[in-house]
Image (cartoon, one colour):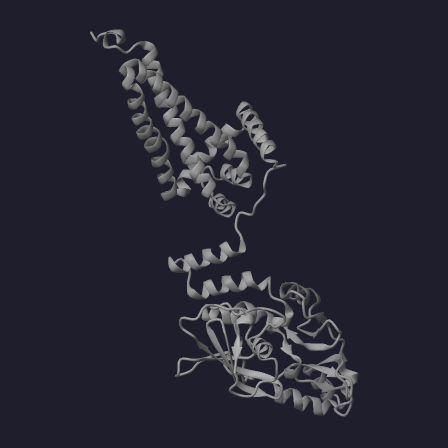
Amino acid sequence: MSPPLAATGITLVDGALLLLVVVLLAASALLALAETSLVRMSRAKAAALADDGRRGARDLVRLTENPQGFLNPVLLLVLICQLVVATVVGLLAARWFGVWGVLVATGFEIAAIFVLGEAVPKNWAVHHPEQAALFSAPLVSAMVRFWPIRVLSGALIGLANLLIGHEGPGHGTDVTESELLAMADVALEDEVIETEERALIHSIIEFGDTVVREVMVPRPDMVTIESDETVEGVLEQALAAGYSRLPVLDPGGDDVVGITYTKDLIRAARSGRDHDAVLAHMRPPHFVPETKRVSALMREMQSEKFHLAIVVNEYGGTAGLVTLEDLIEELVGEIVDEFDVEEPPVERLPSGDVSVSGRMVVSEANELFDAHLPTGAWDTVGGLLFDLLGHVPAVGEEVEVGRLRLVADRVSGRRIERVRITPLPGAGVQGTSDASHR
C-alpha cells in the first residue's frame, strides 16, 4: 500500500496545484501555437485551404478576416496562464525549498514556460504553418465566441486604446503590392514558378500603374493619311505599312478626324469606288488622355469594341496613338508579326555596353540595370537624356547619372532614337542634380 501524500511531504492541495500547473502550461503552449500560426496565415492562403476542403479551413477563413478579433483574446489568455503558473510554482517552491524556493521557481519557470510554453509550440508552428493553423482554428474560434473572454478582452483593449488615443481598430491590408512582387521573386528562387511566370506576375501588377503615355506610339512615329486622299492611294500606303487601321488627318493639318479601316477600303475598291476620297469611308475616332490608366483603357476597348485610340495631351493636341496590341504587349512582352521591322529594344554590345531604344521607359531601365535613374516630367530614357543635356544632342554626347553613363547613340532630327548605356562600377546612385555631361 502506497504511503499517503502527507507522508511524502506533498499534500492533496499540492497535488492539485501541480496538476493545475501542468494543465495551464499545456493551455499556454496550445495558445502560443495558435497565435503564431494564425498571425502568419494570410486570407488568401486560408481561402485556398478552404477551396481544397481542408478540415478547419472555414474557421480559419473567418479568423483571418478579423485578426484583432482572435489575437487579443489569445494574448490575454496566454498572459493569464503564464502568470498563474508562475504564481503557483512560486508558492509551491517556497513551501518545499524555503529561502531557495525563489531560485528554484525562477529556473523552473524559465525552462518550462519559455521552452515548453513558448519556444517549442511557436517553432513547430513556424515549420508547419498549415497544420498548426488548421488544428488551432476551430479551438480558437470556439474560444472567441465564449462571451466572458470576448467581453473581458474587449474591455481591456478599449482601455488601452483610450490611453494611447486610438479611436478604433486598424484595418491594414494583408498583402501589399511590393510584398506580392517579393513573393514572386522568392517563388522563383524556390523553383515554384518559372522565370516567364515571374515576369508575367510582375507585368500584371505593374499594369495597373501604367498610363497610356508610357505605351503609346508617339506622334512622329504615326503613319497617317489625309482625308482628301483617294481610296486607291490609301490602300497602297496601308499595304506598304502593314497596318489595318490608319488615322485620317485634316488636309494640311494635324487634327485626327477619323480612322480608316483597310477592309472598308478593299470593299470600296471592289465595288468600283477606288477614286473616292477616303473621307467617305472613315469611322469616328476614339480619343483618350495621355494620363489614362492602361487597365481602364483595355476595359473600355473590350466593352466598346475598338482596337485603336488617339492619345491627346492636356492642350488637346495629338500626342500619339495606342492600340490593343500595345496594351497586351505590356502584359506578355513584344508581339512581332510578319510586317514588323523593328530593332530590338535592348541590344548588348561586344564592348559590354547596352544599346536601348530611346523610347524605353525609365522604370524598365532601372530594373534592367538595377539602378535608380531619376523620374520627372519624362517617361523614357531618351526624354531623361534630353532633360539632363538641356538641348537637342549630337551623336556621341553623353551624361553620367547615378551608376550609368548615357550616350546619344543615334539622333534623328530632334529625336533620340538609340541610347548607349554603360554601367559605372563603384559610383553611387545620384539624382538629376548630380548629373554631369560633356
